[in-house]
Amino acid sequence: MTGTISKQALRRLPYYLEYLKKQRDEKQVVNISATIVANDLHLNEVQVRKDLAAVSVTGGKPKTGYVITELITDLECFLGYNNTKEAIIAGVGKLGSALLSYDEFARYGLHIVAAFDTNEEIVDNVKIFPAKKMADLCERLHAHIGIICVPPSQAQAVCDEMIKSGILAIWNFAPTHLRVPPEVILQNENLAASLAVLSQNLAIEIGEGSNDRKG
Amino acid sequence: MTGTISKQALRRLPYYLEYLKKQRDEKQVVNISATIVANDLHLNEVQVRKDLAAVSVTGGKPKTGYVITELITDLECFLGYNNTKEAIIAGVGKLGSALLSYDEFARYGLHIVAAFDTNEEIVDNVKIFPAKKMADLCERLHAHIGIICVPPSQAQAVCDEMIKSGILAIWNFAPTHLRVPPEVILQNENLAASLAVLSQNLAIEIGEGSNDRKG
Image 1 (tube, rainbow over the protein chains, first blue to last red):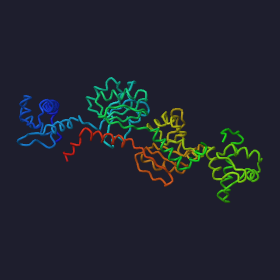
Image 2 (image 1 turned 90 degrees about the horizontal axis):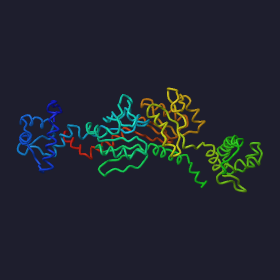
Image 3 (image 1 turned 120 degrees about the horizontal axis):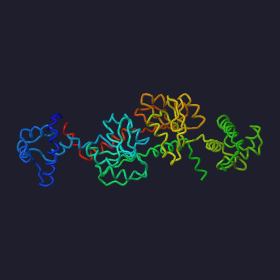
Image 4 (image 1 turned 90 degrees about the vertical axis):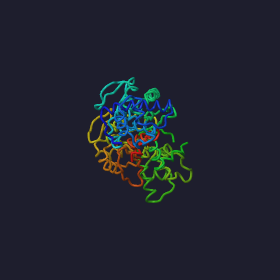
């Protein structure tokens, strides 16, 4: 994969992807050549061959062509569909706002690319969107990670909205139990419980266990 | 322990505590009676008997009196010296400020009782103090938990200052390695690493492992 590709070629990639998925799902195609793709899509064969070569990681084989599942993965990867580095955040109160401007994420290549709240405004140069725009934005940005920083009472509704919008991994800061389907990864972050653990360890350490005698 | 005690009695407690520690450490006293305490401190015996009874958890025994180590623990506990529920925070930027006003701590009986920063100001009705007041305030508040939310470059200096001020447990949000003496509990909270773990799990889940082929 060269990594460089013309703007015109980039515009063709989603069509290849859509076509290949159909071939795989509806016709159970396993291998496919650039010639067949070009014929089916009425495109110039040389152009298609060049496009697919630019995107494919392992490349096509002389006789069989591309393994269709690999080519689909490569296209999705190239197009950023398998984006696992960008997240959206819902709830831009104190904590959400702190996460939104948290420099450290960038050190891991992570970025919060869209923020949602009932109050539409600009926070740290980031525009805050209303929840109804979540599905549209997630699709356009191919974001699959959602951070929940809303109050506990709203967390499940926001979680459901995220999943409907294509979010596959949820980082939940709301101190409440969330129900998610099995294919969605849920990671709970309970800051108060973390401090409580430290407090408890300290109590054990300095022997406040003597309080037990009060029982 | 009745839990109710007059203001005058409360003022006497630190003197009992100081006296008892001296008896334990310098004279290896194991048991002590209210009579001896009253005599040594030139106080009214009935008063002393009443004060100690109000504070002691297990109470004194008719002949031997109080077990001195237990009475010391009970006094410290009563005076809040073994406070494991109150914390101070250093660094009131975005994240520190979010923690400072984080309601959830109270659900665990935890409170941030003092905040320090180079910028002295009022944040959410909490006065921010300069670091030089840390030792004095920690002693007065008997706070033993310190939360570090300063930039990584300042974290070790702040950590050292906290330990000098009597902090015994540190909750570190600065993404840097802190050196603490063995008696101090250190709990690191790396939010960026948490999100990175989620991102990594998502990448595995949706098969971005295909990137490995790019090798």
